[in-house]
Length: 163
Image (cartoon, rainbow, N blue to C red; front, side):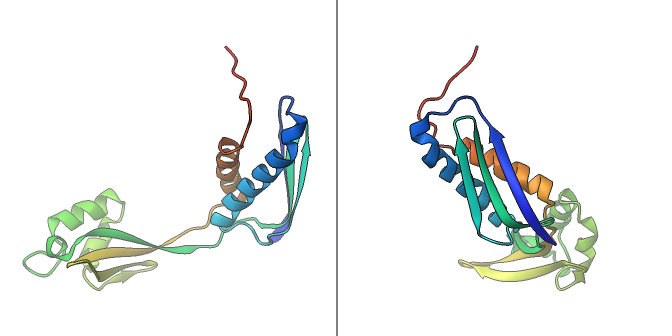
């Protein structure tokens, strides 16, 4: 489900000459962060900038990001496979550290819900990959991360510091 979203940042006095540049940077930073997290349903946005605030209005954002496939490189196949062809202790330890110890019994070609092993050639050696499905972020968490990144990247001409 998508809905409009207004993001407004209250600030100290901003220089009037820099308002257009700051507003555009703020809007593109938020839009880029939301798009990266799969939360932006529509690219259309309206930018607002005054000496005391920066704001951007998005026409449509998702309340939760889409799930996306993730592939994690675990280790070389020679290390992952034991002498008996099953998972080696090194692979079992790596999976346990990731909270997926139950997958060791399914190695090499087992599948558990969204988790699966894949063996691919990378350079000269074959490596074991774990393919999973990363859940989409809720809007509140994705917006918080995007906002933090956008604020850090603002092109502020003169930064004030306080003691």
